Amino acid sequence: MRGGALTTLQQPRAVRAVNALGAAVGRLGVQPRLGVDGLLAAARRRTGLHDFGPDDFRQGLTVLTEALDGEARLTTIGRVAARKRIIGLLETRLQLVEHRRQHPAVADQQIVRPLFVLGLPRTGTTVLYGMLASNPAMRSPSSWEVARPFPPPGPVEDPVRVAAMDKDLAGFKQIAPGLEAIHPLGSRLPQECLALQAPQFASYEFPTTFPVPSYWAWLREQDLTPAYAYEKTFLQHLQSGHAGERWILKTPGHLMWLDTLLQVFPDALLVHTHRNPTAVLASVSSLMHGFRSAMSDAVDKHDVGREQLEAWTWGLQRTMAVRDRLGPERVIDVQYDDTVNDPVGTVRRVYEHFGLDRTSDVDEGVRAYLAENPRDKHGAHRYTLEEFGLDRDEVDAAFASYRQRFGVTGG
Image (cartoon, helix red, strand yellow):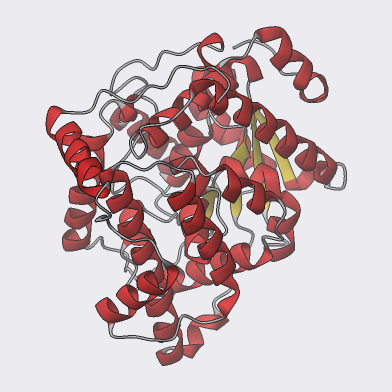
């Protein structure tokens, strides 16, 4: 710890009571187990399946579970949530292998010129992703589809699976009240690529959700080709039930592994968003603190701030090296202020840059998305650099080359 205040979200009294009771029981050695063998066995038992596919996911699963047990200091609810999430991901692996065995032609699905939105977190990636994905001719993975992808979803949403996802999200909102003011949550909203990579257990999803610094250190040293290959396999599965003109995808984490993304998706189109890093670092630190505090009672704000500063300077350095090799026809840069102040015009500019067909449905979709998801829909998100142990001069210096290269100013 480096001196930041230990804080948690203001959880309901019932949630705090469950965590307190669980902590007391845990001191007696009774708590949900996160051992690898037990998790694998639970997934097999729940599905009746046994083949997880290639074993290259096991190292990440082992590193993750050891970090969750050894350093995350999970609450009772956090431990239950971690166990449920891991078993669910293992079930997805089992079911995907079995579905591919029964339907081998799915492997012939072609993912052509997918469009990826990437950029520092809190730079407008989510709203731009939502606006681009609102075009009914395009294809994006809805949260309910990723959570329950079997059988492959068709063009009409499955009300049973949507309702089940709504129930899951309602439970999460109970343990993390106020988080929606920071990041939107919804069963029909487009899901991020992190969730498509998570069954490989080499995904930035886990450091986002849990305080697992040893797992994050391990992840930074890995070749994430298997994780991106798994994402492609997942997309083929979803596409086999319902295809669009192209995939619209997103996660800020692509900044860290852009070279790998382009190896697996060599014809990908990129939308790179930009915003003043002094606003970015405070906002993303607040987001990370919110997620992790829902799972752990020992989240240090200063630790979070320092980690985020180091993570995203590292990620941007890697991305800028890749950008040096990319032709301008493959990528468009979008400033945060343009996304906020001229959303329809910004989406039009993306379409024009890549030569995509734009009909009146595109503009109508953007306006409908914004009407349904207005800014501050769930309340204002307030944060400062100082509460996360950072100061403006330090952040400005760390991102000086990035700001100069992309002409980033403002908030």
